Image (cartoon, rainbow, N blue to C red; front, side, top):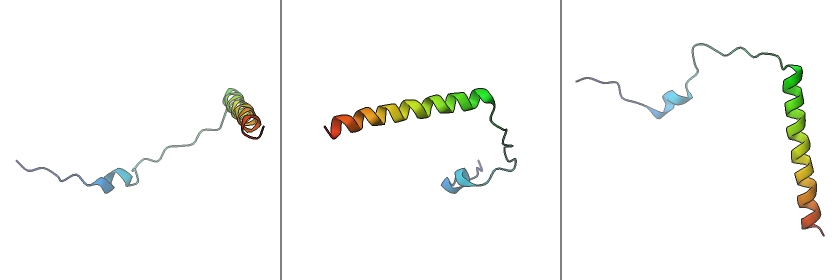
Length: 52
């Protein structure tokens, strides 16, 4: 039985069809803003604990 050898570099090869980027909607921006605010809030709490 003949088979093609599988190379690890095939995973990193460029796909024939490139994905089209869609613009971010208002709800996408709101979700990103919430995540950033939560991360900043957690960073401030951790900084206050470490430097106190």
